Image 1 (cartoon, rainbow, N blue to C red):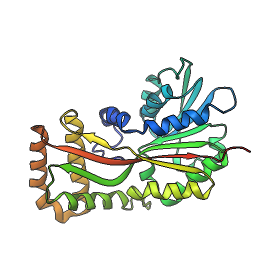
Image 2: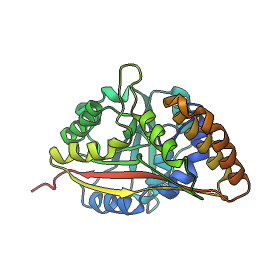
Image 3: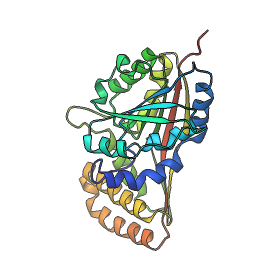
Image 4: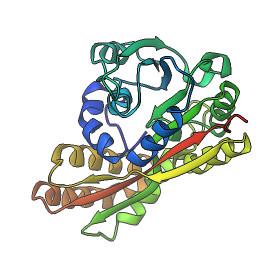
Length: 280
């Protein structure tokens, strides 16, 4: 996840973060995708969006790509998929139609046959939740299907707060450890995911481009800043209970700074684009 989500994948949290996500994603990588797809065979572009949630990635990207397009949105939560189906993306660049269908699926089980026919696979705020084996499987599935992959907003393990506080580094380290901790027998890569994914795609012959995609939070997004801050500190304390005594006044200080418009945060993420080899 791209920062703590205090209520799971609740629609309210996804709606709150969607404008910041849209501003943070790399428009440069979207333009590279557009240029690459412009040379493809005619016909509708099939995009498979993994962990689609309420469909925010389609709403951000569809209008930046040529059309017509058909998006297949995958998620494990049927309630989120219902919202995604009801909030269709805009028209493609040039005004062509964009179709959407939703599928409930276990993302870790998807393989190359499931991605067949896709010109592009997308995901957002997903990569850091995967294990090393799952990242390798995703890279292999994309390579097997011969499709490009645009994976945005993976946590990078860096948070910068202004003004600085002596406890910042300790909270950041505990949060990063929380991102990597084993849950249900799975150990997600957390901030290590972008580097691991880049290696996995390159090993399978893809050209990989990485770009920063930081959230810039401040007085213009007070609710998101406050929600992110409280979740960030809570995850750090859950990981390192010894932080609890110092974390309480730290959170009070940071909350007061946020409410007075003095606090700014840069929450760093990484966007990844993997392009399959050009046909001879």
